Image (cartoon, rainbow, N blue to C red; front, side, top):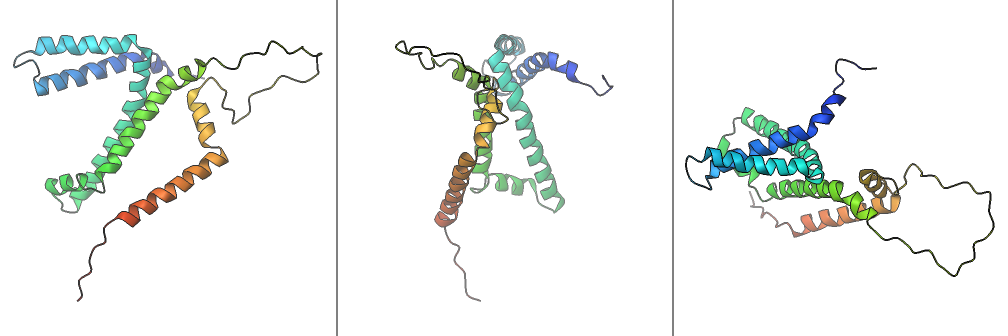
Length: 205
């Protein structure tokens, strides 16, 4: 039953939001860096609109943006509230810039950005790359046997042969062997981080 808060209709206009977002971001960047000189707002608007329309034509690019933007907004909001809490305890803007630029902080930001980018690429191209495979050829020297009463195979709950790349990826990652391998890699990564971290000399009292 449709309700007042039902926003499924907005999904049909998702591409329009992507076009507006790309146009505004590119126009703002071109106005900020002034790549074509001062007073070129018309040229900047035409370039931004042309690139935004290319995203409208390409469904792959639009799906990438639709997946990336919400997660980037989550990271930005998390950083905003973190800096807001830091300011509440009397820290200055210089302290926040120093914190973000710290060698133990900014690598994790790069890791999260790269992870979102790879997930977006996988969501856009993953299923099409899987379906483009040639598959196994049927042998020609096999004599077909008689009919059997076996029922056709059905996809299980954790099947990796569905038509959704996201479902296939999640079912693969949830496999016990894959989770065990990731756990071993995680332990090894933390071991390397803590073992190679320089020790802080302790001054005697």
